[in-house]
Image (cartoon, rainbow, N blue to C red; front, side, top):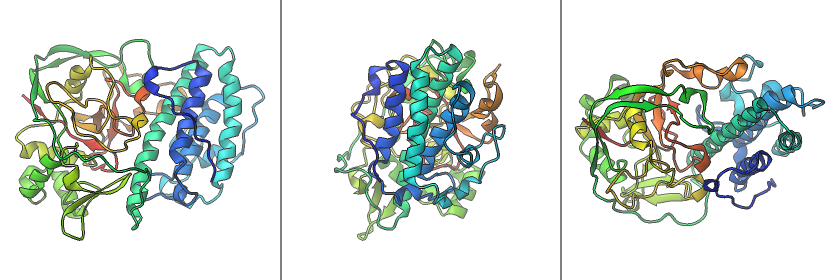
Length: 426
C-alpha cells in the first residue's frame, strides 16, 4: 500500500486558511496509516473498533454526504453504494451495515478507498477555496473535527488490533522512555461556588458542549496528577480485583464475567513479572511505574477511588479547574503514543493529553441543549444514555481538537481507549 506522508505540521500553531487546514487534517489520517499493511487495515479486533481502511472511507463519506452532495453543484458521487456502505449511524441518511461486519469488507480494497479520498478531496478543496457561506464553512470545520475524532480512534483501534495479534507487533519505532517514578501527589483546592461551564468564545465546539450555563459547586480538591501505574499496582496487590465491597454492582459483574485482574494490555511475562503492551511493543511494567495508568474502565477507576478513600471528580469540577489552563501536553502530534510521567506536581499537571480522565458524571444534555438540525443532529444527542463523561484528551488526541469544555463519552465498561483517573476529594 502506498499513502502520502505529509510534512509534519504542529497544530499548536493554529489554523490557517480553511483549504490549507483541510489538507493538513486529511493528510494526518494518511500519515497515521503509513506504517500499516493492507492486511493491517482490514483488522477489526473488538466490537468497539473499526478497520483502519473503514476510518479512511467513513471520514471521506462525511464530506461527500454532508457537503458535496448538498452544496457542490455538479458533483458526481464516487460510487453509488458508498452512501450506505460507509454510513456509521445516521439513520436519516440511509440504512447501514452492522458495525461488527466492517472487518468483512474485503472490497472495496485499500487502493479504491484511497482513490475515493482523492476524488472527494479534489472537490472539497475546490469548494473550500471558494467564497463559501458561513453555513458551509461551519460544516467543513465540523467535518475536520469529525476526522480528528477518527484519527484518535485509528490509534486506539490499531493498538487493539496489534495487541490481538499473538506476535504483538510494534506500530511505532523507538524505545519507550523509562519512567519509574512520578512526583509526589499533591492536592489542589478549589473554593467552589457558582461557576459557568460549557463552551465560550468564537471557536469551534460540538453541540453537546452547549449551552454555557451555571453550576453550583461545593468546595473540592483535585489531585495534582493522574493515578500512576505504580499506584494502581498497589491497589491490585491489595486484592483490589478480589474485593467486591470496592466495586459498583456492574463493575463486580464485569470483574467476574470478563475475568478482569489488571488494566487492558497488562500481561505476565515469562518470568512472571508484569509487562505492558504499547504501540512501541512490549515494555516491562517496572519501567512505566511513574506513568499514568491507562486503559481502565470507569468501573475500575471508581473501584480504585473507593480503595484510596477518594472519589472521581464531576465533569463540572474538572472543567472549572481546567478553564484557564493552556492546552499543552503529550498529544497526538508528539508521536509518543503512550502516557508520560508528570514533570512536577506543584499544580494541576497533565490536564490535557496523556489519558482521558473518567468523571462521575453521566453523559446528559446541558440545560437548554439543542441538537443540530437534520441528520447531523444524530452526531451526539442520541447517545445521551448509559454513557459516562471523560475529559482532557489523550496521547491520541490532536492538539487543535481538545479544549476544557470538550465532552468525550463512553459506556462504563470501556477499556480500549487511553483512559485513566484523576482523584477528587471533598
